[in-house]
Image (cartoon, rainbow, N blue to C red; front, side, top):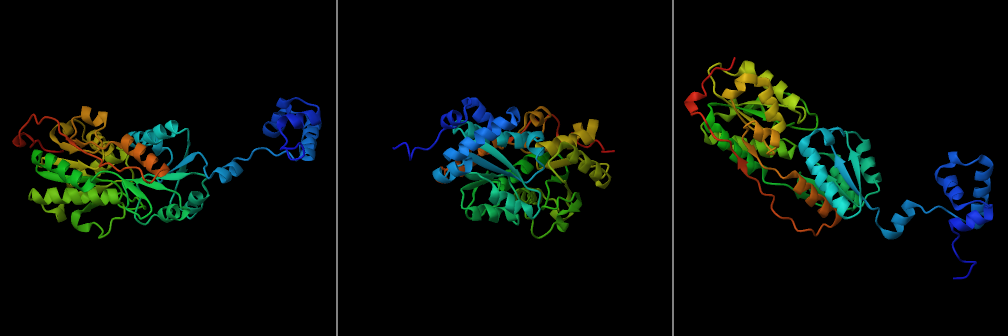
Length: 355
């Protein structure tokens, strides 16, 4: 390559301006550390030589890669760090990012029109999505981007690989394990839709369409077992929570208590361990006479004697990340198991009244 066609370097600019290489670097990256007269001289030398800083966007355009993996998160951003299961999932994504020397970009969505712009404008090589609703517009935005994507828990969308276990079958199994320990089932539900409105309802009052697939599938599994056990699903009490937080589970159970007969032996079917632990908090000492089931097999739930479902979210985070980088990644079945603590009392011992 002739000297005339050689691309100028930092050293060339430093020599032209009569300064050190570090001064050139500071001029462009930390200008506050360089005197104005010196900055002007360096920039004049760079302009004369046709020197331009390496541009990350330009590099990405040339290589077709940004070195970043986008994680689309439809919860409050702090939820990613506060919720133990969300943190496990993100740790799985981070495992792959470390292995592949990638950055991880958290892209929060708030159900606003700007969500789509934020998704399409992200400089990432692929997307990992936390479970969302069937009608979430960010799903279409991800597909339109043309970048590979994987979603934990659903929904099933063409162009996005769903990673997750069979929630309906698992819900049916965990309910079947819990129901023989009492005689009055109630359900502690995750949100039904993106409005996230908490409240009390019955099986007969549920909407015909529930756009959150995780909630929809778990309710279907509970319904199958509740009905098989001889209970009337239409009269089954359901407390819907705003978010998957322990305190929301506690508040929902406190709201349920006035509707539960005093002589009832209660079985709380909670859609997560956090909600199940909240139920325990609300019941206090009475919790010794109430059966509670949860979901995720967290250490805290196991220590509390809660019947629960294994849900390997770190494994799912890793698989989502691998799939978002390479859509041809093999998709193994996500196995689940019921963990059931010993039943120390008989069914007739679960008749202590709930105050």
